[in-house]
Image (cartoon, rainbow, N blue to C red; front, top):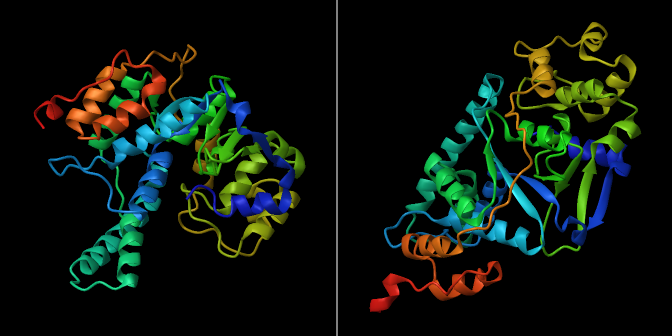
Length: 340
């Protein structure tokens, strides 16, 4: 979920913090990627246009296609990607995850019912695609396979100890990366200053959310902004009934923090209003401390081609051509094709 209505809030009260740059300005820049966010986004798009990909053994390979296409698309623009994978979710997020699992389980039941229908209507097919998106899952096996592909491409990645968003914010605050690419707005709440949203390689202009400009427009310090985000709604605590976008803005402007707000409103705080713990998590989340800048290695493209063609059963001629710009030492010939 990120922060509820934060994008709408920013468009209402701080349009100045949304800037654009030419995509060419990302050339040679290090961009942190929220791996799960991007993979789910691509898997949803792919499966919306079909049922995904499998190898000759019927094993799902859609995630391999997704990580390859996204990474190569970025590399062709001269962007240096660094992928950050989520670690263990904090206990504060348990209720949110439970609710998501309930929604996913219901979607699976509905999907199974629709798939049993023999003569499917166009509406049935649309609903199957929609439910297929809602039930998309990345397993630990999928993640390890994606990371193997990144290693063969020479692309660095980090397994965050907790939330990838927190790790990405740490990296940009400490100048290890230049931008963060994600659709999750709570990156701003963790302190990410340059957030790329709605990225498409076909676009010439890239949208950047600048946290410094946002705080300046609102005349907030970081703690006030975090309390605003908690009032709007985050993954780590329930919210106070009757406080929406406009009222949250007015309350922070007047009272500056949630403690004072609670003393001056009639609503009672909900039973699971863990705002103090949520605030602490945004300010000081668990992250992996690194001491060196990221190193981008020359990938082993021959091994990559061998893996995706002989193991994942991708098309030999297509991927030889597609990866040619990475200068493989020789054209890979699949052993499977020698006997065709």
